[in-house]
Image (cartoon, rainbow, N blue to C red; front, side, top):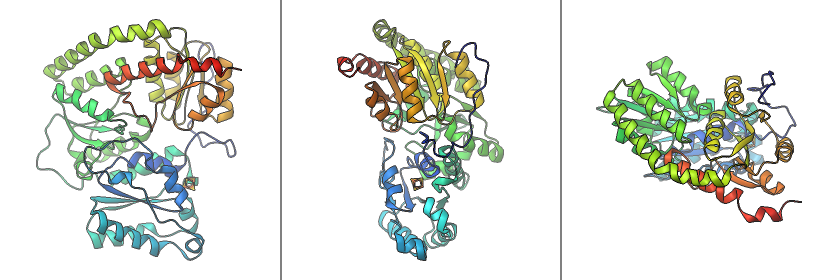
Length: 430
Ligand code: SF4
């Protein structure tokens, strides 16, 4: 709890068996990170349930191919479990490559493959030789850890592509955007900002991602990392191997969005770039503040519960909510570290409940205890909110409105206002 409580939070550990954690499995973690690579084939080696669970899992938009939206699966059955699923997998990869001519293929293993021990790596090597495109095994049996371990597996898979090809020319002032997944087209908003500042975006990993751009990612001067929970591993590997520095940013809320732009300009030590960033921020402030003030006047006194995947996003949300007069009474994440929670503690008001790796029973209890008016979370938190009779704001995979950037801040304020102030909630309270 924020305030006088000096205890540090117990976090960054495996979930307690049987606790019905809100966290997803390793396979799901790898899938959410790799899914937005739009010109690659994604094949799940496992039962159809794993594929259905992660089918079209993010609202990641593409400016070109949409191969990522097809969720192929080997649909392992009893017979395959007994005799092995390797022949089925080999046949599936060949058939799908011939059909779609992808730039690369990611082959995900699931729990059952971890149990029966199919040699997926060998099959990938064989097909790679036959077809001449990267076939990348993603070793992600769900039971081997948590969603966070899946992020690491995905980063390792991406890293096998980095540095394998170079484009003829990459501008000196170029960055890779790591950890934005282009939900509802958010990446395109950011690209516009960077373009106005004169920054070249070399690769977007993985939102609206292209295999060739990822192969050339080692030629960028800087990795700008959002959703650091999922992409820190990749940034670290690229630092070790290619000496590319990285910086952690958030694109949510006016304050963090502006800092993200200034930090990039500061990195390049470019006065002209900084002046353009300042101009952009000034214009956006002038445009946004009257509208945000209107929302603040009406929302002041409302209370929010936040439970999201990454703690860095939770931090941005606390700041963004404060800007529109909403107090964060519960702040939690699935994958935060001790440092993240320390930051949250410093940021939040006294008495805020700070929680790591929670479950539905705990979250419901906290929400009732703190009398929250709105719950901000992802797909698994939505039913918790609705069962309690509480407004819900999706700030995760499935959102249809961009919530990043300055544009996103207005959308966020609108959504919080429309949901928290809806008259329907007076009929749901016992
Ligand atoms: S826990 Fe295992 S069976 Fe369930 S979705 Fe994840 S990989 Fe599939």
